[in-house]
Length: 126
Length: 169
Ligand SMILES: [Zn+2]
Image 1 (cartoon, each protein chain N blue to C red):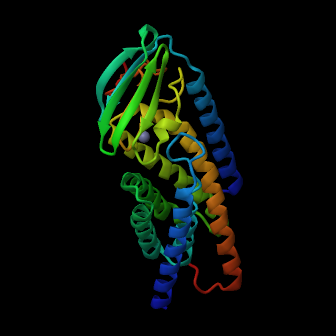
Image 2 (tube, chains in turn red, brown):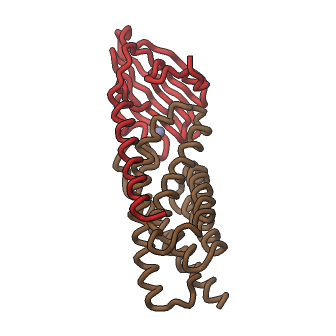
Image 3 (cartoon, each protein chain N blue to C red):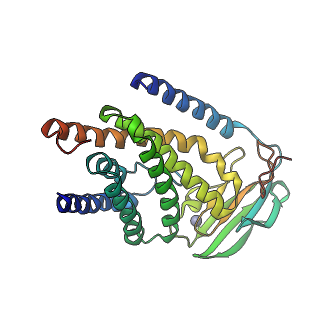
C-alpha cells in the first residue's frame, strides 16, 4: 500500500480513538457505588454517597499492603507497597474516569455502573 | 559472516538493554500503564531488517528477560513478553509488505499490537475486563511511539543501505 494511504488510515485511527477516549472520560454515571476487587473477586462494595465517616481498608497482596482511603464521595489509594505505585499516583476515583488499578497486587477499584453497563467481574452486558 | 552477525546482535542487544533500562528509570508521565516510547524497539526493527528474523528474535527475547531482571520488576516481565511476542509475530508476518522507506508504518502497527498484547495480559492477570477502557489511549500512544521508533530505525537503515547494499535483502 502507498504511504499516503497508510497515513490516512493511521490518522483516522487516532481520531476515532481520541473521540472514544473523550466519550469515556465525559460519560458520567449517576451512582457512586464503587467495587473494590482483588484477584478479580469482589472485596467490598460501597456507595460513596452514603459514607459518613472516613475510613481505610487495607488489602494484602503479593507485593505488600494497599491502603485504600474512603470518605464521603471520595475513594483513593492512599499508599501501596507495590513496585510501580501507579495506583497511588492515579489519585481519586473520578466519575467517568479510569478505574484505579494496581497491576502488581491485582487490585482494582471502579464504579459498579460503567458507561457500557457491563458487569464488572465477567464483562458480560447486563 | 555468521560470527559477525552474532557479534552485531550482541552489541545491539546491549544497546537495547541500555535504552530499556534508562527508559524504565524515568517516572511514567501518566497513571496509565503501558504508555512509553519503547526505544528498545528501534534495535529490534534494525536487527530484523539488517540481520534477519532469527537474530531479531534472539535480541528481543534476551532484551525482555535481561531487562526485567535489571529493572527488577518481575510483573512487568509478563506484560513485556505478551506485548513483545505478539508484536514480533506481527512484525515478521507483515515485514515483506513494507519496503525500507515504510519501516515506520510497520513499527506503528507493531507498537499498537504491543500495547494490545500488554492490555490483554493485564486483563488476564487482574481478571478485570474493565481495563479495556485504556484501549483508545494505548492505540494512540502506540501510533505515536511506533512512528518515532520506526523512523529512528528507518533512517539508520536507509543511511546504511546507501553505504553498503550487500547485506540487505
Ligand atoms: Zn500499585
